[in-house]
Length: 284
Ligand code: AMP
Image (cartoon, rainbow, N blue to C red):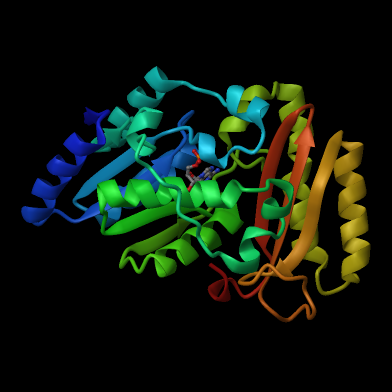
């Protein structure tokens, strides 16, 4: 695996690869890699001749300074995992490579998507996500992009970004990898001990509870029970929502494509998870 720290050098190298006909898949990450990230690399390996991964903890998408300061960094281990996964290129830029002095942040018109759910609780977050993804795509110019369903709203935002910026890149949304308890793998889980991880698994149990009871119990009742279960496990809940899977607007009919989404904080660690509840082909 070749490691690039400079955008210009990576750009030149990848341009040559493209000219030699190599089709590339790209996996952007913020590091502290786990099996969820590796499943994206795996999918990219299967679909492309050449795989590029980036690790960059993007300050622009953190609305909370403490969250940025405590975000886990495990670069040496990440490099080992990527070497073992067959990744061809790692882009490991410093902030000045992504946001040089001349960088002028564009505004991305994401519509309501920007302000719902994660957007409501993390103001500016999705503009920050668009900035980094836009910059990375400009540098890497991949044929295909691999992103995780774990960040459901982010997937919708990135798809919208590709439309706004008129990029012809195939997007592959990869299912969420979980540990045996059901807890969605996340870099932030590194900040939880085993007892906390046990309690955190309530999040995925609540999502399964929605799926099981969607057609037999009124939605408001499901939402109340779900919130209570999360709170009794020690979570401070930002939102528990069952919404239209494409627009993220409140559900009006249980027969429309629906997704359940949760964001909640356990002992200072904010976690998110989601589950599509019906007609999966009409979702992401
Ligand atoms: P992050 O490093 O958290 O920014 O994530 C980088 C990419 O990995 C994003 O597309 C995430 O949605 C994806 N990802 C994170 N956690 C998981 C998981 N448990 N399963 C599958 N993909 C994931």
